[in-house]
Length: 313
Length: 313
Image (cartoon, rainbow over all chains, first blue to last red; front, side, top):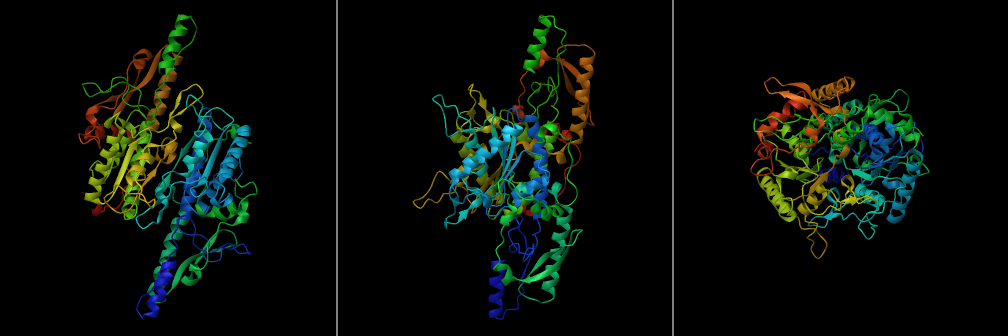
């Protein structure tokens, strides 16, 4: 919204007949100010698109768990790298698949680990993976693409700008290689796994599929995305300049939202953060407060699979 | 089926009361003998699971095309690495998304390129990508995980056995890095892209999600998978030893299959191949014969998206 704000001000200064209206649009939910002390997000409760990406990942985890239950004797660890380079709302959504914490799941946000010491991050994650393996013999790791696991060889264009979506390596591959001990080979070139069980870690990268699969659209998100756009269009047509349309949650239950406007200036100067207090103290999970906040956004109930006692802790 | 065949013979030799019955189960469709001169697959028309994986990829390509239409000014090239290390039935299924060949799509099977000269493979693919970029300004590449693009650092377990699913690098990442020119950096560390347009190539790896998403199950495949299992169970209960249940296509239209049995010995000694004549002469596509064979397996019609003239050639 920074650009919209600048253009809006410039147009006003130059006396141009130009109406600038913002619509929040960011699937990683990084527009809209921090969580306030009263438990309400300052500028925008959530951004359209996020609810569908969250539903997509939640269903992915449920199905990955079925896969992992069947294949863990050879592939005990599955590492899934998900979007959100600087902010962890997307990886956090993995918890929506399993609010009761029965799946052997680690959720790692960029904000949860060290920004500087990648080596300690790799060691820490390995330790946590092995704790899960000891207890449940298998483990699913959801990791945000911005978690610091070392130099990914970020590509720069001819102006020197970082091109985050095309790094030489990816976070899930680096972590998987570390778990498999690719860096430690014996005299015959065989990797020395860091896992305490037999078998390997494998990795997946759903990529842009996270944000473009019609099959996993949240009905709630679809409706809100439409309405927040309608609100913005009406705002622009009414001749008011320099606002963003926004989604305001009515915190009384059942879940309900209203649409409102907020000055672009306010949005441009409010940085969104994943609330620190929503990260659990063990740093590999998010809290029930996050689940309560996010669950209404993903729409109807998730598919159910047969319960397997082996996957319960 | 090799193991089933060996156990069956050993049990017979030792006079054990053991019935061995095979069920074809391989999503990459690599069990069942070659295509015969009469246009019929010798042992098994197709393996259960394949139809759903094919539907999954076809829908993925349709949606990737919508994404790419919107994002090509910054991300003109999307590389999707798919399953099937030795055989190309899975990448071939991308063509089912677009039998009219309107999407700027390259389909690369392990069998289509050189098994030895990875450097010429990389150069060849780059040339083909740039041809698409010249014509349509964007390109989607579907590449089988077994295409030779150089040493992927295949992991070996403590017995020295290859662990294909956990290689140090992946085919889509190696190709993407080559397209982005990560190996060619100037004095300031900026990559020198091999693409003839501005922007980057990015990569995705749907991984095991290809074979486990309920949302994309082919109704045809679901029914056949059940029935071929029923047939095998009945076979075993009838006391006959040493057969695999199989799917036989009735080549009269409309599409219809029957179930039959075939000796495990025959299956174990028939190697499946992707028919060479189903690979187009330009080596980046498959023929209409493949489409005609595969289309009935993926079930009902694919979702439709708005037609965009820019994506037509």
